[in-house]
Length: 314
Ligand SMILES: Nc1nc2c(ncn2[C@@H]2O[C@H](COP(=O)(O)OP(=O)(O)OP(=O)(O)O)[C@@H](O)[C@H]2O)c(=O)[nH]1
Ligand SMILES: [Mg+2]
Image (cartoon, rainbow, N blue to C red; front, side, top):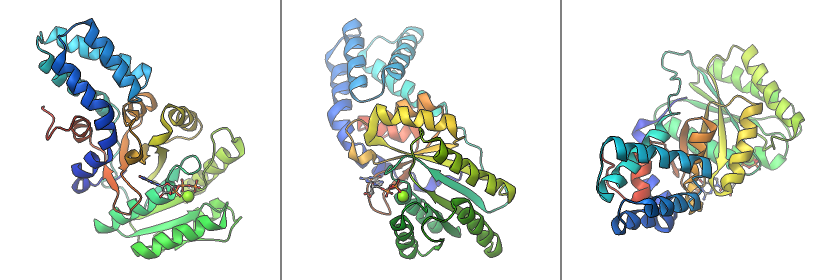
């Protein structure tokens, strides 16, 4: 899945986690400033991380790793331990970041965008299409959310704003047929990237999950070799959203996650839970409702932003 290293935009990341930083991680910083390295500090840290939505399992894992670092590196001051916490968070976030690169693969790259209703798929597609376009790639969009007429219009409005073509059928049409036509159009025009919008669906609706698989099969038959499935997850849905996403990834193979609406929550710790529990790379974050409100995910910038640091120490 292509990344846009030029578009790391640490300032966007920092802006998006403002609430999370102010609500929880500033308290973590204060804790390390005011407490000695003892069990009381670990207990309070555990509580703050869980409140920030890091999730119980991931919080315990972080604490274990942190205590090991403190012991092995013979750290004696709370300040050193805070540095070790940041390192541990970066390590955890980086563990699942190895993504197959598409360098050398024959275009077009096909990105199938999936997720539950209202998670931010269509908006995220517009942001991604815009990023690709800005980096000089030709993009074509497929309106395979044929479930509601407004969905097709929504994508077409974005398409004309960005200046990319949208392949659409009518409402109720077969999403597989839309994907087929979009891929054919991309091949005929020599496009670099195809992004396919899909209808929101719950993982519990097996017929809808089958529909996604059918779209994938249609694309595979077209020898769309570099297919990637991007799961869009609404950060504001917290642990519940994570639970849904886990079931989603069990039903459909996903390659990476876009965490939308990170700006809309004080519980941005969810990013750590997602990376750790879904074992999927977080590729992008949504930082607002506008076209430009997207940043490539980078573990070090993210952790730095959570703590309000300029640069997280190596
Ligand atoms: N604040 C904020 N809002 C976002 C972000 N991404 C999407 N939204 C908003 O979330 C709402 C739903 O976005 P859509 O893109 O329509 O979501 P969808 O997944 O395509 O929805 P369905 O097609 O109905 O399943 C819209 O109001 C978007 O503006 C983000 O990163 N930040
Ligand atoms: Mg949509």
